[in-house]
Image (cartoon, rainbow, N blue to C red; front, top):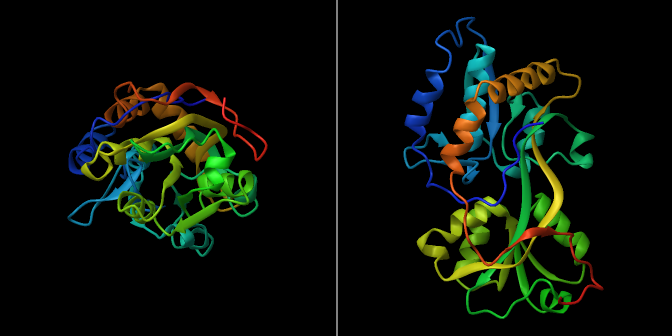
Length: 278
């Protein structure tokens, strides 16, 4: 099993050019066969994947993809794809695999095959620091407008747990954060690490995590087309980069230090409509 990340914060987005150089040194014979592995990612989900000012892609997912390509001795060709179209793009043959902080859900497994997981994720709520919003109270949740990214594990979990809530869905996480920061929504539910990154930015300086960390047994995995032999090859390289320390080096680069927040480090079960504040 790959390393699971506990409560962490970002050491700042790494320089993608430096990261690419580091990955290139891992295996000097990478891509000698001339084969190309085409990877799809979103490019809008920092710190996992993002688009730099010069249009290049960076992030944890991008560095993991490059490390896997180096181990497989193929050339990585990484392209951005809007989230809503990322699985259709794979099925249509636009790319060979998706490395995009994708949760391996049973519903998605009906369309794609997943590799072994490479990251464990939890969910959090965010709101203004001076807000009395308490997500441990279902009445509070139903009384506030809540932002989330469309078609993600966070929005799917929230819609199921709180069908009466006023949920605002956004095509990208950035747009959800934008409306939260401008006060057009009261709170937001998100994967933990993108939330921590936004909180460390100027836009998120007046905001904080609210309530308890939510463990829904969510694991990120790489998606390939069903019955593709690439699944076994990626699993082998995932095991290799974990064993030789490459995974840990990339992990440390993005998620280096523990963070002290007002979040309860003991993960809680998702609350339901009948739950009350503790």
